[in-house]
Length: 94
Length: 102
Image 1 (tube, chains in turn brown, green):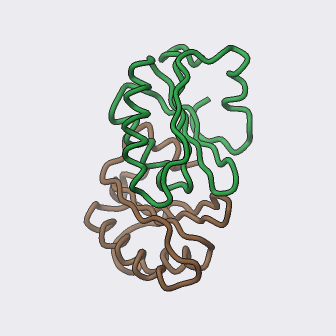
Image 2 (image 1 turned 90 degrees about the horizontal axis):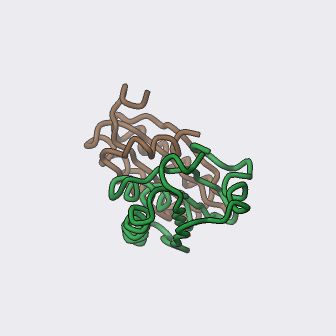
């Protein structure tokens, strides 16, 4: 399913929803990536997952991390996995 | 059920989802283990559990703990149980916040 628009996975985790939305906006505007999920992890943590080509995901995550740093309580983690293992697919899509 | 692919249990708990996914990826890539669950514990804690042969689980948990230490708020706990008691099995997948195979 996710291979339709690239296999690489980009993740941005923030403290609070507002920086997460800002990051999601910056990511989708910066490069050709799809938002695949938004998770309320608990404790105020919100995680945004995007997928796309590795280069696009890389650019998107950098832009997203930059954008959300200045908003609210800001960034917790920004990370990219170029080719997630098949087993991992089961935990990134509910 | 879980015995199809080894009985040993490996657990990694992190603060936040991103290090948990990184740990899960590192674990499955480093050894022959299966992800059996991902659980939102609350308070931002996320736990991923793997099963497999004891040696594989050991290698996987070490690799996973190493990988996720550098990501976000990082690692809380990494632990292995070589042979969980039968009574423990239902506890591993009992809650509703679970995703993955059970």
